[in-house]
Image (cartoon, rainbow, N blue to C red; front, side, top):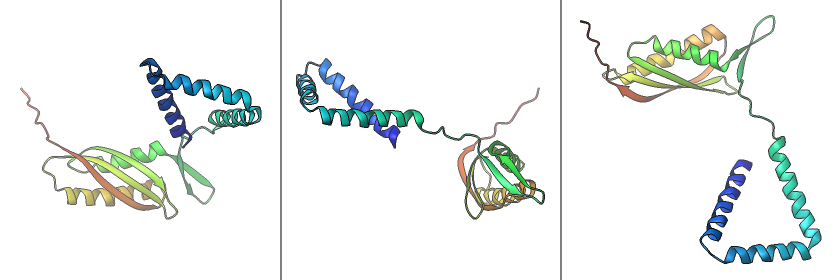
Length: 171
C-alpha cells in the first residue's frame, strides 16, 4: 500500500514539473502560497514534517520480503523443511513424465487443509486436454504426497498454450 502511495506522489511530482515546464503559472503560485503557510503556521509545519519523517522511516524500516519459502512436514524424530524450488521440481518432473506435456511451471500456496498447487502447462497440439489434465492432477498430488509427506489439498491445472510439435528430419 505504501508503494502505491509513493508511486502516486512520484506521478503527481512529474505532472507538477510538466506543468511548470510548459509555462503554466499556477504551480508557482501554489508553491509560494504553501511556503507562506509553512512560514506563518510553525506548529502545523512541525507536525507535517514529523509525519513525513515517520512515513519516510517506515519505508526504510519495513522488513524485507521473504524469498526463501519452505514447507514443513512432520516426522517421528522432528520436522523436515522442503524448499519451494524442490517442490516445484517434483511437480515439473511428475507432469513432464506424461506424454504430450511440453512445459510446466507451478505456483504453491500453503493452506490450513494442506498445499494448494497451480500447475501451468504447455501441451502438444492434438492431445486430449481433459484426459491429460486429469492425469496431471492425480500424478502431481500422488508424487508430492509420496516424496515429501506434505498433504495436498488441491491441484489446479491451467493450460497456457498448445504447441505444434515439429518433426525432426535426420539425413
